[in-house]
Length: 425
Image 1 (cartoon, rainbow, N blue to C red):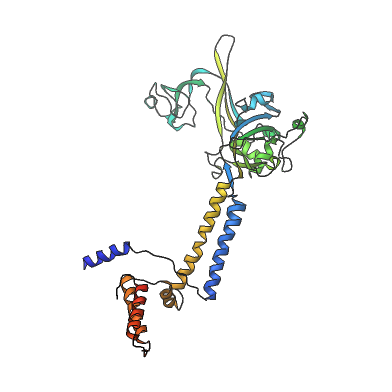
Image 2 (cartoon, rainbow, N blue to C red):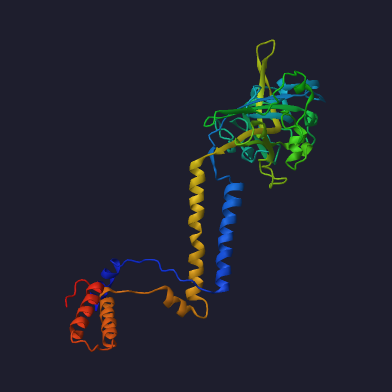
């Protein structure tokens, strides 16, 4: 039994299958066949060639440079600073224009700090104590501001705070609910972007090619003015769906995306920058303590006696990240040929699908299956040919001619030789 199965499998490996075309007069299957073909053709023409531009060679290795400059002036009057004018040297960090820049919109100031001993902030749980042993000397307060001195500063019969050696007095104030630099909504940022596609040696900038020096001093970006790179900060933030004053109070991160999608089969003037503004920090945290964006830095100075002091600033603000992406495409015979050949190959799906329906899922599927698939063996074919020829010879009428037997035998032999050349009479 096993040998028979192995023999049959071995013989099947040497079988040759050739196509047999059967014309089926079935309107439903014929209609389905044309619909599938039409769907494939529409996919090829509309999606592959019109939408995805499959006839083009593309270049995504875009080279890009970005220059940013912020402009704007604000006036504040606070108890820490008094009356002060804020310009770009005060609120832009870092001062040089890059693709990432930070604008200060709110801050907490702790002035006149110097190295000394003082009580740790009572908002630090690790600094709470009941006795001096709770404040081992020399150990830092991990989330605090300094190193423990070994003393627990407390009132009688109450929880105390560890004494530390640090920049004193430590920061104790909370973030103002109203942004100090709320006027930053009217500040502007100049974003210059230069791109180059090396494959096609194509370059372009997002700044209008004009010799008018007054253009950049008077224009402002808008949907109808794509080549003016002057953006108002309030416009950028509002385009993300956020409120500028709320964002300025606690800080956040805004992404400015510049997208270049250039069809170089058209004129270079048709390649325009597309801008998209998005909020990149956690917008789902709501009033969570982790929301917003802030950091600290200090400004140092010495008094007349040479003692070093500093002013600590905890700044809140908006971090802008400029991202550039793009691609360029141009007609190429190779991608066109590949996509056309792929589309023609997909046409075979229509035949496969309709054959599947025809021989399996309709009422006369057995009849169509027998017509479509036929197994032919050489030995059986020869036997059938011999039987047919013998039958035809027996049915022929005998002639009166004396040589009739010889002629008949000669005729039969000739027929056999014609049909099977390896048989002899």
